[in-house]
Each structure stands twice: as structure tokens, then as C-alpha cells.
Image 1 (cartoon, rainbow, N blue to C red):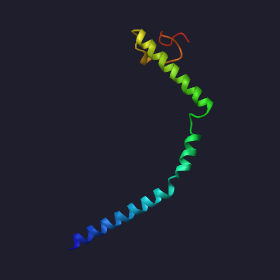
Image 2: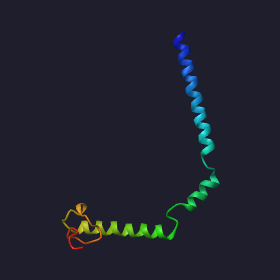
Image 3: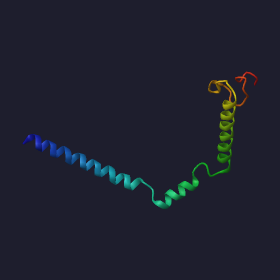
Image 4: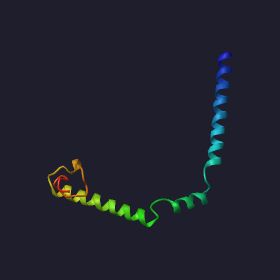
Amino acid sequence: MGFWRKALISVAVLGAWAGVGSALFVLVTPGEERVQAMLKEMAGQDFRSREEAARTKQLVMAALQEAAATQENVTWRKNWQVGGDGGKSA
């Protein structure tokens, strides 16, 4: 009898805390309008971050093209801004 009572109380306490957590989650999460507004304001929408992303993409593509054209292990390169001599001529 004591085991079942303790198990029932444990389940009730866990259920109550799950209910409290769910209620807090519902209160904290933004509505659909706020989500859409936040997505518009997120990084990637302004000119500077788009320019930076394009530059990063160019660097990655240049490194991949150079890696495909050479036998050097370009992953060990210290300075990615320079060419295929291992970053020694900067």
C-alpha cells in the first residue's frame, strides 16, 4: 500500500511540474506575428551581413578550387588569404 501511495504522489508531482513547465512555455513563446517580425530583423537581411556571407562563400569556393587543382594539403594552411605556398609569402 505504501509503495502505491508513494508512486501515485510521485506521478502527481511530476505531472504538476510538467503542467507548470508547459504553461510557462506557452506564456513565453512569441505569437506568429512576433515570429514573422523577428525573422525580418534577423541577421542576413542587412547589406553588411549579406556582403560578408558572399565574401566567405567566395573564399571557400576559391579554397575548394585550389585544393582540387593542387596536391598540397590546404587544410593545414595557416593564412587562408594567401595562395598555395602555405602562407609563407604574406
